[in-house]
Length: 225
Image (cartoon, rainbow, N blue to C red):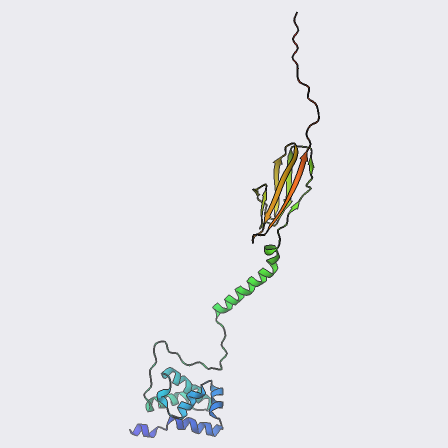
């Protein structure tokens, strides 16, 4: 019992130090980040309403540093005066409520990915959401031979079909397809489908003239002697 009588109560030690520095409970709360409610409980010696040991130890350490008291000695005296509620395995020291919390690396990495995705979308959006385009090279509506080379260019990400047959462009989007014409009008339906489903469609006709040269039938003549 003598040991407990020789130890000055924690509430009195903290209260005297606050008076010497002319610091109120609200001011002490702002300086330490310890809730004013917990400071009031310490000053009123209502230890049974305080949280578990790691929290109280953290409070006393911060209060001691602010009031020029030995925080570890405060904690040692506190444990001698009171039965301390021990912490569970998941308890941690209380954090300063005024402490600036910085996001962890996973959060920063996630934000960076989102920003990069937005930048890419802004610059690439026209190619994805715009109407597909088709450029044909030297396409004539008449032909003199039955063989025709269809050449042109599209966005390499899009899909091209000519009369429902898929035509594959190179990495630059350049394509070429050779077709055979029949006499008269030949119809070609070009359809370009974008990445997001938008389509561009156009129809072209090429006329191959029929031969006007008259072909005389071959007559076999037999001479009888």
